[in-house]
Image (cartoon, rainbow, N blue to C red; front, side, top):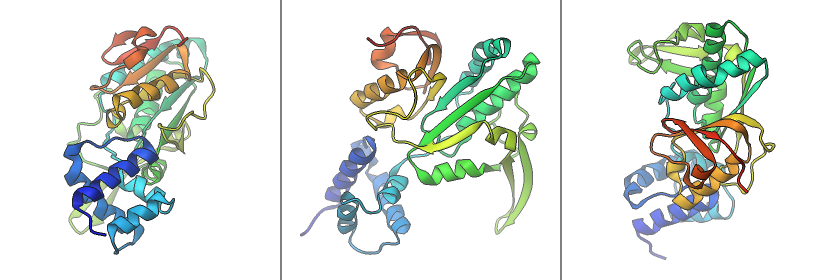
Length: 281
């Protein structure tokens, strides 16, 4: 049966939504074409693309499909004002009380965000002169990026602007030089003390429920991932996450995201920084 390129793109969009809840807009056609090539490589497949998509619809190569079509744009201390808020407003209370802070990082991608959270905890401990006990659960739907994050090895440029002035990367990474065809590159590897603070898990934000306890977290980072969902699904995800945030806990959203229906249950304390004031009835 003959089909058009648009038929293939529509099939990809339908599959991606059914498997992840992610909605691809009509201006993503070039990206879809590029990712189809990636999907074929990941599946080691050279046949008809529609046959492959039909096979995925039947439950085959689902992980390869998800890994091929999810987006993983991130860097250390992205939107660094959130980490300043975490350091200066949230963490001092836990340093003073001695209680453990439990944090969650959704859509953690290749790990830069949860590692930035962990570095912020260590920096706050140093500034306050008190040890802060913390744990971070970081999840993503893409198994490849989770493995990358767990390995904790990143390329680094001396001209990098990723790290704010109050963070000294040498305190948190081991540095080594690697030779390649284009010359030399600097690799940095996360210290074990940072790794011990974080556990990485596979999780789909579009699942009906999440494997966490009610009011489990003091802090939730859900940044720059909701933009990949429809407005209705964004609202659903936020309400599910909200059940796991303590009263008085902080929710951090990305710069182009908003709390949707949660606006009635939170207090805004900064740029896309929201404190939970009451439960959803």
